[in-house]
Length: 135
Image (cartoon, rainbow, N blue to C red; front, side):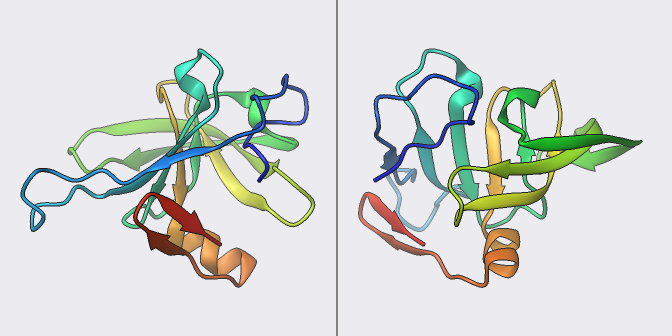
């Protein structure tokens, strides 16, 4: 299994950790399906798979293979606040696993992958099992 890290970063100890988040009451699940994190110390290396998100958003320009400046646009968050994004680009984890039209927000402290956008762009599906996620 490959870890999620940009081409320019050091290796993340070659693993991905995934865990499902839910409250003690199984009928009250959060909108976060799973967390992926490398073994680096920075919070900007945490990846969330979110089935309610409309956009991919990252917290560091270092993740991008390529990016360009756009007219600033607000992105509304589920808590009612919004963040301003000024860059969009592409991130390649492998030659077959990549994200396009990823937004950059320096005010984020994690990285968000929209499951619906991922499935649409890669023509794939995502399956969750206990503490694993399959593309």
